Image 1: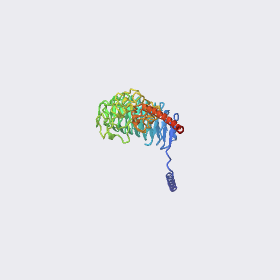
Image 2: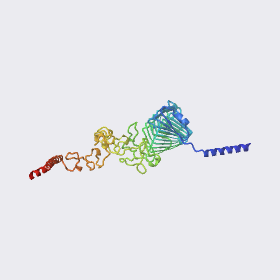
Image 3: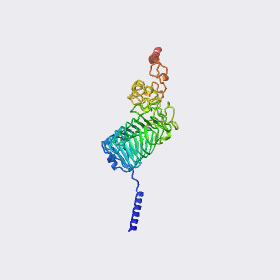
Image 4: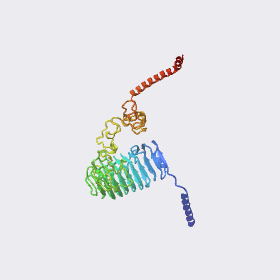
Length: 481
């Protein structure tokens, strides 16, 4: 009986292998969730390797991710999941192919995690905003027993509010026994009250935090760590800014901190302790003159990271700043945002009305949005183009017609050119006869009038001659008589 069971078991295994080898893998599916429909329903019917695209909209629901399924929003600024006071997103025992991308996660609340709870698995979270979530610990996110990659995310106004301070904290994030890589992220205005780690509370595991900014986070616990509090584990913090966190920036543990701007200072290679010159308390972009610019370590940036939290080039040299970081120029900046100022006029490209022409005062005399230094058509609206020929109406030499047709390449559209085949860029017409000087034969209107008079006189003489010739026979007959 034992042998029979063994043989049957082997046959089943072999048959199963043959079936798997003979059947092609099912093609990955793409599901689309329109506004008003359930995201969780799409997750439930999806399979490993599938992608779910969620349209821009506001979705009030609580979702549980599925292993190997990518959930992609239309962008955190236009796609929101509201947890309605329960944990917004949960993930259990997933692998690295599980992705959450492009959402705002808000209004989540529970004991263990407000915005997102990740347990016993691996996954990637990117391009997400976690805001206004609450939990006893890990207001924005709680991670336990997992390997997680978090890129291009912001955590703001999240709260950890466990009534007892024994294990609470991590206003934005709590990490327990997990390996987490955090890159290009910002943590601001998060609160642990009471609790340690205003932004991040680390209990154990290994963490790498690169090019991230921590500011205005508060920890009202026994141990502090307004920015980060560490109980155990190993941490590598590079190219980061921790400034104006209360009561301190980093507390506990023995993290390796290099090429970072830490208020109050921190022992490490390339660290500084100078005001990062944020644009404002709510705008964490360092401004021109900040010593965080071109001061990071290029080798700390993973090759896959090519942009900053704004989506602008991660490596952008500031010509007006001395490179104090390390690597082959351009040198990466500290923090989540690169100073992208191509014309070095002190105004970041995304706010500059002339990104590639210095216009420090941002003057715009005609109010068309293009600064005076790069205005296509000064004193006129550059975007008013009735005939859609890319030439603004105010500077259009040939309104109503396509200015691109130009046979003689003199920048004058053919339809309006007074010398169609001869370049006459200034359209000079000295004799005002409608023919430009470059193609004028030199005949003036008076010359033409004189010639017409001469032709008329000549015609009259010809007529008189013809009449004389007609009378010749009569004259001959008269002479014979």
